[in-house]
Figure (cartoon, one colour):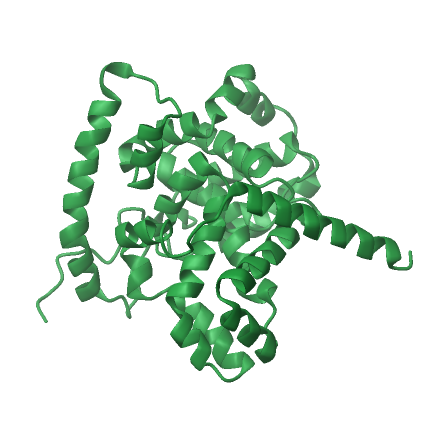
Length: 337
């Protein structure tokens, strides 16, 4: 095989491990670079002469096809309406950083800093991203007392920082994710997360009933399979460019995108899942499906999430959430205090 022209570190600073498949990656990039060039021209025309981004069908279509990395910070802020939150409190981030911090929160955040992307050159002790990440997480913990600091937020804030190269932008995007797009995912009880894992189980039951029954038969809880998918929003799960493409849509279309990604991964890998005959092989299978070539080819993968799962309306998700949340409340009331 010819020597790869690609570096041992990707453009976001992640080290490529010894088993990295350079051949598949070169094959993917030879096509994807053309896609990126076309999208860059389209976005340049859309954003030309300082035009602001509005939520329109054209913008939605463009977002689904990928936001060029140089435009992600401003476009994410606009389409998620985090910029409107910032306009209300323009000095908030700096004011929090200028105030005293609670030792308990400082200790919690500092514990997770070395665990965040240890294979990324920007997050080594010598690099300064750990300091920037600390600032984002400690500011958010003081700003939202209900959440404080929750494990998983370090990966989200860390990737926001790599994508936006701005502490303050990352802070506001983290705020909009936790408070508007994914409410109750990161609270102490994680009610929103627990409900959404059940919602996914119901969607799999409706759309791929044999997979649903097979997973039940082998005794692997959906929470074991998918908690990291939901908590980290696929960071540290799927390839980095694929995650950022998912986040493009997440900031515009909301949490429905997470279900589309989950269902696509499950449906596209149905044959492999059905071949598993015990708990351990099934767990290994779910680890493998997020690392295979189809997940790496982010442009085709993102096209597939709008086709493979079939119809998936917000109304369906809202109804399922309401039903499951009600069942949980009733169950909790029955339990002895």
